[in-house]
Image (cartoon, rainbow, N blue to C red):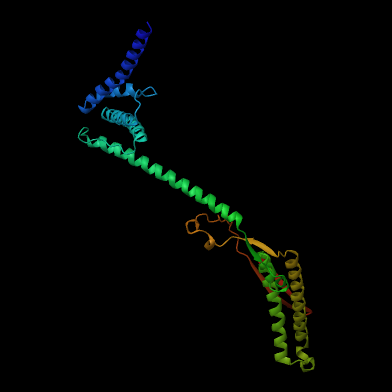
Length: 296
């Protein structure tokens, strides 16, 4: 009784193994004779529903490829592409035998699918490589800090030098323009008076006395204005003084394959209306002064 049971189980296993082989042989026979409508359901029954009835990778690749050709020849190109992709997933080197499949459009469809998969794999590998390189570069940048040292004595320079060192360009432009204008105005008037009347006021004709006095007042006023702006600029530069600032590292110290890979994104700069500062000396019969105007 026990021997009979074992023999029955062995026969059932042999029959189950033989059945897919017989179906595969029938499907291959129909496929090789270009009977695609007959071969399609035979291959489909071997592969669907999952899991497939075939075990070997080569058998699976061949079966999916043949099923793809059958789908293409029976008017289902999208289904054919799906089966071609399955075949290539089991064997990336598989090809359609032109001696069996003589339709060049079917071969072209398979080749396009193969090339598309290869392109997609290359793109994924390139994206992965670039992502890894970016991670390396970020790690390097985080471990390397560039330091720029700012000398304190520059805060005592006129014409906005301290502001420019503090990277405060608007203030630097303001102090450079106003200090320059007041100093030039004062020096120019002094030079004119000395060149015209000498260094002593006793050489000034009586009829020019009022005008010369107005010019002297303007000279002194602009001189005081220059020193006032200078002191204000020094105080501002000193208050905002930073001994050191972090700077971007020089890409020359990076490995060659990482140079230029991750350039810092520049913030979008809003366009500012053009502005201009005008410093104009002002004379009046009873005095002198300086006028400032700001145009947008």
